Image (cartoon, rainbow, N blue to C red):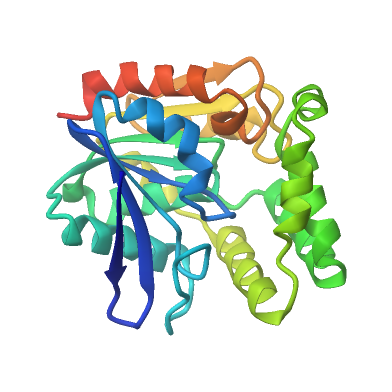
Length: 268
């Protein structure tokens, strides 16, 4: 794996991981914003593709920079990464809030995208999302440690967590304690709550796969069903389980699904 640092015009420095060979695939994580989210999927995809994943601005090894952190800015960061790597066009896999970023890339810089996978995400303002993340924001402001624990409890199925409780302990240890860390999370929550490009989705023409899990309580499957109806010829796939973080809980199964689909569409 190659580990790179890419400088943005506003002073942010993005930490990027690149592995494998083949068609380029950019992996975009959700609210947590980490490259590590994709570790299991990325390792498997890299057997057939060149996989690009990164820590988003203000997260992990990447610095915050000076500009407002919006979904549009996070999409521009993706373009900065592709430019720095001399990638003219790439497939994009976005998960949760990363799916919002992937949609924005397709709508605002469609010439840079070959195919798109949208996992556990949404395309319009949803009352459920607004209420859920409003509640999570209030918890963040009251107790960052409990916010982190609650995030883990919501993101996985109870049966999986019972066998992998270290995930909860790791989330607690990495809680966004302190004003700078909490502010980064809060502004990202504000960005995803404000996202709505529903009216524009019918003009997308990229090959698109929409994926969700039947037991996801953060982005319930009805949101994936609706999103798939708004994108021309989008394919829809329901996973039987895995919770919101099915790319972690079922990394091998999800990577297999992605690899098969991308081999047919990522080079178009």
